[in-house]
Amino acid sequence: MIHEVDEGLRLLLVDAGLQESGVDLVFDAPTKDWSARRNAPTISIFLHGIRENAGRRRTGTAEEHDENGMVIGWRTPPRWFELTYLVTAWTNRPQDEHRLLSEVLRCLMRHDVLPAGMLTGSLAELGLTVELEAAGPRTDGPSASDVWSALGGELKAAIDLRVLAPLAGERAPAGPPVTEGLVMKAAPAVDGTAGDDPGRRLRYEGAGGDLPADGFAAERERQLPPGRRKRGSAAR
Image (cartoon, rainbow, N blue to C red; front, side, top):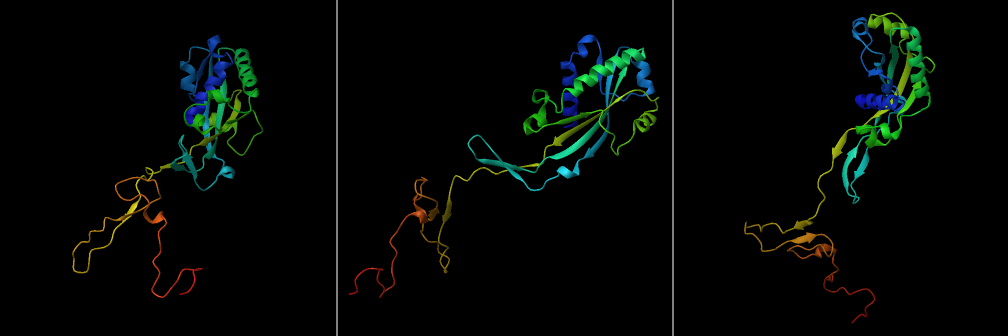
């Protein structure tokens, strides 16, 4: 799921035309060594936080069906996770970095969710929205200065991007559908000899097979005990 969110963000910025102007889009950590090696204008989308949104957690299972309506499996509900990115621009001049950040911010502010056409893999299969929040109010996560300290770099302008995405639940496949009914046969006699009862198929009329298709579902005349009469018949 995480790599699919990465791809969705990349496609979103490519669609905005950032890559066409010669800007590299990377997901590297912007450390001192990394910044010293870059040789082109770059937008870094660095993932530094993954946390579950426990308020959206659900229990139970849901059935999965094929095109004929047959149950082919069961899946637990998806779990929702908040991914936190640090988006930075890297050029030789601060003015150019601010211009790039402005273009990224404008692109992100156009969308509250990732467009469906930019979702791939399990995100596309689930058909659920992937929410975006750019430069929102600060939460209880690490501050920008803490992130930069961990990276070993100097504090610089950055966009705090939060993505709320679902992780598909676990799937349990269903067994193949039952196509042959149960067959009930009489047990061997007490003396050990086997009976010649071919058995009775426990299924409904029209099932086919070598054994009689009607089985116990077919109507049959009930044999009454001696001295009993059918309800409604005249007494002799």
